[in-house]
Structures are given as structure tokens and as C-alpha cells.
Length: 410
Ligand SMILES: Cc1ncc(C[n+]2csc(CCOP(=O)(O)OP(=O)(O)O)c2C)c(N)n1
Ligand SMILES: [Mg+2]
Image (cartoon, rainbow, N blue to C red):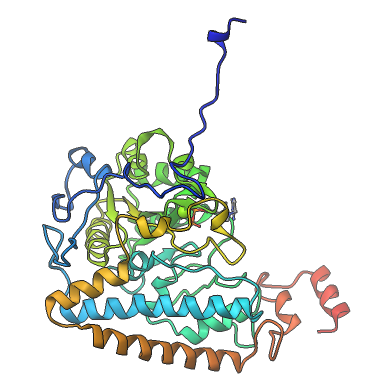
């Protein structure tokens, strides 16, 4: 065979590796305020550009600019800041609790707090999220008690899931938070199915699917888009592109189209990219997509462009696969600092008040932690009963399980 006829496989590589200088010069960032805001009933073919740009509201000076700005009041923004700060503090304490052996596992949101906290505020009671493990902000911003989250993390006697789920895999129907599945992408089709059921029943509730950049490589992602597109399901399909899927950079799962949002175009689904570190932008785009679903105009795909600052989980060490300072070089900044600066520019916040809020939030998280720990932690104190593992699956327990339960003496 002639050498020039030999095939070779193309394998995308990240721009930099540990020891290299972080480089995001290949990431085009639209100017804040520069992307138009179409009507929600726009023909998807007219807004294909939105799948290749980035909708941003907060500029470098901390001003809110452009057609997506102006939706939130001072009070709502202050509340949003508090939610993000709470999630960050909650993460820090639970990460420490894992290192102390109080739980086996934890996953944090560092750098991605705006995505789930801001999105939650665009939803109505009864709407249902199908989240991944990185959307605890939906619960924090939805008023779900931190103590209950911690009880689940500790698998203690007050764990509402009775130790049957991996720590951080919460579930609350009342708070619109469908049980998390460890099998990635399964919940995307479930979200579309739930939305279709809502439409079949002529209900008013909508569904929200969540998926990470890496998980969009799963077949379930594509099957979900087919059904959402064909049946115009009342669903918002979120892709959280945090640049990494554990050690695999986003260029592997993204494919050749250039962005994750572009995936929606082949299905005729309006597809937008948003600055995932901009609380105002995430909220505005979420509102737009939620209104489309609510008005029965069909699905929307949103790519949240963000960066996973922390490790993938407590079982991961990112220094093995990316430069240590890469997160500092991320061009979209930190969501908490950006909203804080905006509130200072608005004249309703200050460095002193921020420090004070940090202290108050830490106190509240520590108080919740103390209460949760009074119900037990992984290796100490109260535990769910072994009997519980036999319950909650079958309406009527099959004989073989009844026998096993008797053998276990519970
Ligand atoms: C079907 C399936 N394949 C693989 C895994 C193992 N796994 C858990 S998290 C993860 C990375 C997911 O990355 P991404 O979708 O980008 O989400 P992120 O963690 O970055 O939020 C992998 C491969 C799994 N849980 N399920
Ligand atoms: Mg990812």
C-alpha cells in the first residue's frame, strides 16, 4: 500500500495539558448586550445564529446591558446572590465532611452556581426538573431545606431516601426535582416523556431536562431530541457545557458542529447559547425558553457555557489532566463575583455587606450541618433500618424478598 493512501484517525486534543499555559484564545466570546432577543414565537430558522454566539448581560464594568437585561428587581438579584453563596458554602462544608469520612462521596458546583440557581427562578410550582448531580442550586434556590440535603448525603436515620441512593442524588417531587440517576443521559428522555404526558393530559406544567457536555454523546440525548422535536414537547433541554467530562475535554463529545447548541438545529429546535456564569443572562434565557414551552410552542435547547472549577468529584484529581491555573484564565469569570459587582454598581450592595452575608451564610450552613449530624453520619450515629432496603419497590413484596427479609431478621 502506498503511504499516501493510508488512513489515519483524527482524535481531538485539548489546547493545553498540565504544565502548559492555559489558553482560551480559541473561545469566541460575544460582547455583553450584543445578541438580539427574538420574540418567543420566532421561526427557529431565523435564529440559527444564536446557536453559535453567547447571550450575555453583565459586562466587564458590572453593568447589565442589552435586550436580555432588566427582568429582575434588586430584591430578586440579592436573593440570587444569596442562593449562589449558600450553594458555594454548602459545597465547601460537604467537601470537608467527605474528607473527614462523614460521607463517602461528594460533587461540588464551584464556578457553575449561576446555572441552576438562576434557572430555578424562571420556573413555576409543579414544573419538573430532571437534573444531573450538578444542579443542587435548583433545590437551594427552591427553598428545599439544607438539613434534608445533608441527611441524604450522610445516609443517616433522617435521610428521606433511606440510604438507597448515592450521596448527593437527591429526590423531591414537591420541589420539582426528579430522582437523580447515575446512568447519565437517561433523564433526558424521561424529561421529554414527562413533558409529552403533561401535554397529553392538557396540563399546564412543563419539564426541564439537564445534561452535561460529555453526556450528550449518549444515544439517549439524540433520542430525546427526536421526540421533543416531532411532538413539540413542552420541555426546556439544558446542556451544561463546563468544558470537561471528568478528564475528557469537551471537544470529544461536541462533534464537528462547533457548539453543543448547534446539535438542536438539525431537529428544528430553537437553540441558544448563554453565558453560564452570568446570573442575569441565564435567568433571562431560561424565562424565554420556559415561556415558549408554557405557550405550547415546543422545546428549546440551551447550552450554558461555563467552567468546572473544582474536581469532577471527590474521587477525581484534575491536576493529572489540565493546567492548575486553567480556571483563573476562564474568560467568563466567576458567577458570584460578577453578580456581587453588579449589585455594587446598582448601589444596593457593598464589600462590607458581602463579607457580613458570607459570615451569616456560613453560620446557617454550619447550624444545618450540626442538626443533620445529630441524626448520624456515614460511620456514626443513626442509620436507616436495613428493613428499608426491602421497601418501596413493589406494591406487594414478592415471596423471595419476603424470605430474604426474614433471613436478615429485620
Ligand atoms: C452511562 C454512563 N456512562 C459513564 C458514566 C461515568 N461518568 C460519571 S460522570 C461522567 C462525566 C460526565 O461529564 P459531563 O456530562 O460533562 O457532566 P459534568 O460531570 O461535567 O457535569 C462519567 C463519564 C456514567 N455515570 N453513566
Ligand atoms: Mg462536563
